[in-house]
Image (cartoon, rainbow, N blue to C red):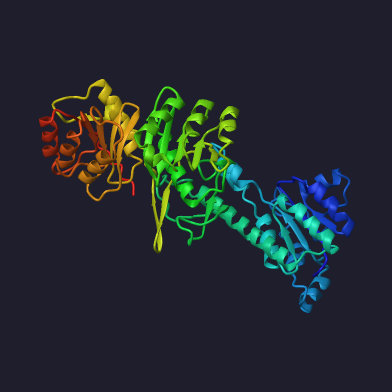
Length: 511
């Protein structure tokens, strides 16, 4: 393994570089550096050779040209085992470079700034940095490339253990990391510049998927399936901080996301209980503890082993209610110290602290051979949008229940039916192949009395039978999208049964 004799260092993020270079000095490594990085090292009293001294050319064009020179790139790309390469270096006075420490202009930070101009974005596109990184990664057999301060300590440790050498395995892993970095950088530039000067398209011409592996999982939906969590952000369920409990499973994360999306619909304190992606309890009440008690009443049997989500920091009273039942996982924006103390007794209970994300631009699902992409279902229905289709209009208490039920049914697998009261889910019928069967399943599973509830349906009733079946159980009002060729028959059935019926004009299928 060749020893590191010469390093090129050119950094935007200079975190830890002074200490790193100090650790290199005992190995006799010569440092070549550029502009601001060279100044930082010199101010720390470290010996540095300027790039311009090596190339014989000054930095020019406001720093756009400095390292893209044969005397730099040749020193990186020369294959040490090829005599003709070494002869070329000697002929042209090119020093071999064994270590390249480079990171890039902060394009993504500039791109995130509201109102960033085209010129500002362009000037934050790094040219020399990606060139140096790719060149070093290409020649990983002879050159180590370092793109992150997080790698400094490990590299110094290996150099000390080996007397100044880095193993082929280390060089290979650093090269892979470097290629991932430049690929992500190019993607970020392409994605941001594609939005300039063109109308904003909801669906991109090219679907570019990239995310780091954030968390290995024990297995997928079943033990024979491998799985991992990938994420490119620090918010939502994917970016949540786990405060305690066993490792998260694939199914935990899917259910937690379903619960978190549901509870995020509400402005007042709300709780959601989810099992196999469907809510088996949900409530919105003046206090968080009361919302959880009301949610739990909907289906205590199914709540056992479920996951919970809350739209308020978890307090001690709510924590004590949770502790009464076996729960797999909890998601909340925060936890009081008292709540954590209560729940810490359940060591396996997974607690996630979730930062509320900006809505995803796209919802993506894989199918065999490709991906489906759609914009997220962000429709927020309000009373002014509703069309009362029956002779009787809903009373105020019915309106409150209808609006609550409509928020919940949006998060139930189709065909979806929910029975609800104001602020409380009463029963759920999910995923049946016919809508009337979803009504029957909900009524069959109901623990709470259904007399006086309202019915919410995620899509239209193709026949009157669903409404007629629900009326047998005592509902007083219905909310649904409308749009069936038999709407008039369904409305007539509602009038005959003295039900109020509201059309939303919006469907909420969830597959």
